[in-house]
Amino acid sequence: MEIKYFGEIAEKTNKTNESISMEKQSLFELISYLENEYNILTKDIQIAVNHNLVSKDIDISFEDKDEVAILSPFAGG
Image 1 (cartoon, rainbow, N blue to C red):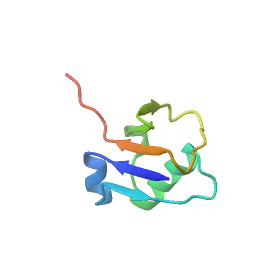
Image 2 (cartoon, rainbow, N blue to C red):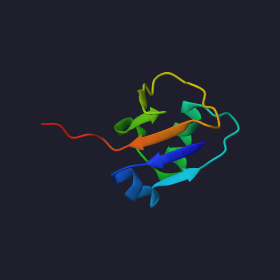
Image 3 (cartoon, helix red, strand yellow):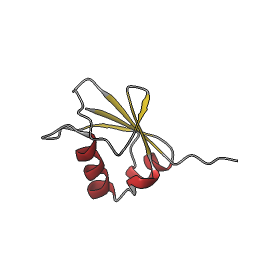
Image 4 (cartoon, rainbow, N blue to C red):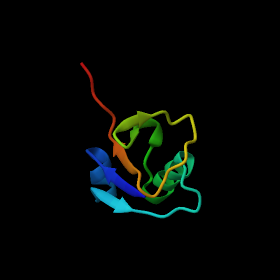
């Protein structure tokens, strides 16, 4: 699966993208990976799959061809 990092998340991971393999390619598994590998507070991020924002409360499965974007918290005003 291809993961793209943006904003503060890219700075924290020191990467703008990476390809990873997980035993079970799911949203919850990805969240666990981000928390353990990069110590990212996932409650504060947004996740998009194939350019669509997804809820972090529902475990969805990924396919190898899916593009996952990890987005920094948005500031509003």
